[in-house]
Length: 238
Image (cartoon, rainbow, N blue to C red; front, top):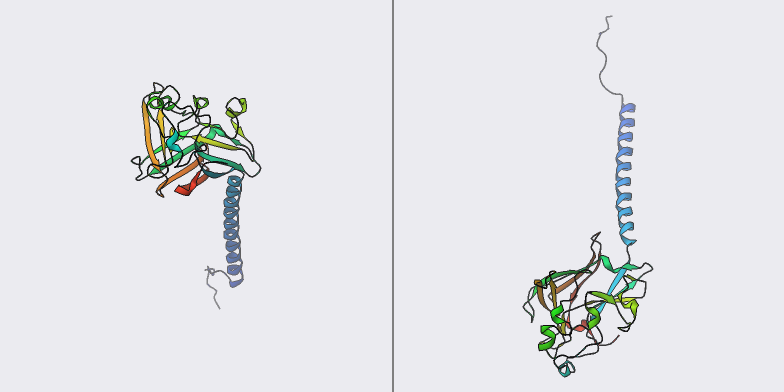
């Protein structure tokens, strides 16, 4: 009997099964490593300090009492967006970035982004043109000159008020150019100026359910807080 010189090019069933097992194991390993990578990424993010939004602080004023503020009234406390450090890690305030956007409000709506190095406009500080001419709204105190974010709950002559590190349990406030608890609902004004004092961005934001604030780490983009402002966010005392 003559044998053919050709060899069988097929793969035996046993070898085929083994190859399928090897491929399956490789695929399972890739999926496992990918999943582990996502978990590690999530874990890294949760290592960020944790911050909660406390409310829109009105420095003791309410819709009923804000009318008592006369022109050129010196405020001894900043009003604005109040946050608290929770968890067990401190927060570097110099890395904070606030975004606030609204479609419509008593101030006309708009959007603004502000960081630690965007100080309160001098127009609204004591001696500024707005301070000289506006009444019945809460304007920033003198200690906000050159600052946007300060520690909360400290007297204006306490040097720690301008600390850049907030420890767990500390609160800090992002000062607004003005806060008006009754126009016609709770509203805030924010403004960013250039080095010459000219307006770069200005927005009037109402706490009427269409304004969204987002507080992020300016370096990493990590989102600490995302919140829709509503009237009940107003707090006169803490």
